[in-house]
Image 1 (tube, one colour):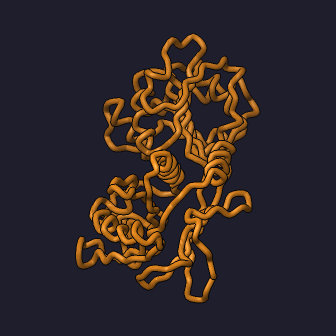
Image 2: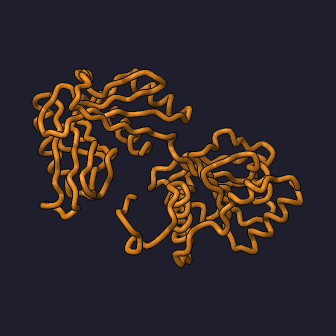
Image 3: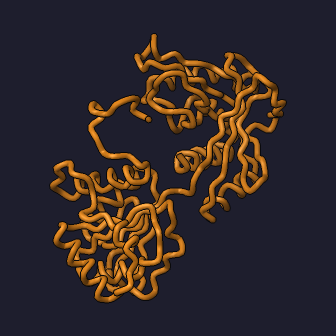
Length: 338
């Protein structure tokens, strides 16, 4: 979710430089089931351009039509969309549409928070009843300071008013150790998920960052100079060097960190050999660190080539982060998003 909000704010900032008005759209409540859950958001400009989506594409045109009154009156509104009678989604979504403007103070605080990799919160105040209101809107809370997206918003905290509160974690990161063709595919696929990708290669690597579409950075530190301070619980690590010695040396550098996921490319036999070599170098290596290594990396989808293997690895990372056991949805009991 954080990467989606960052895209919306970056877009809104660029629109403001062009003096282009915009509304901020938030799904704040749901009855039944829908394509996306509450917390998904989008932007719509006064000339009909929009960024983001709150559905698979079936609701956006109606929201754009409803947004025209907000552009005219500069007054927020709450609407509902009943998918049971229109698109067969078996749910009713409650949508908040509000005028949006990013102050310099808000944008600076937002950027600092992302850079410091700390969570923050957004509260969206609304009513279940459809209509225009002066006291509905979204407020960001960053380090105890409140920033409203709508400068005219005043929250009266009445008894009938509801609040959808959402915590945004730091942007999810992927560190890829290795610089071969499969790293290119993994980098490109991870970028589509909105992840920030860093490729780590050995000092003798001659490739540039341009070789890895989707990567924000390519770094080439020596094994004893790897900085792991930015690898946190919102980070996945994948080792795909195709070298026993490099994998061992990288794991030695990573042994004191606790990321969301560590994946090791290769067969079970290769994994056992790498761990055996690692234990020879670090005999007191913790069992917890060894057990968090996912090797072979990925889930079984019959992947054959580099692109398919990337999908397999990303699917396993998502399942680990979301604490889900991979299963065909037709075999899953209950709602999809449970």
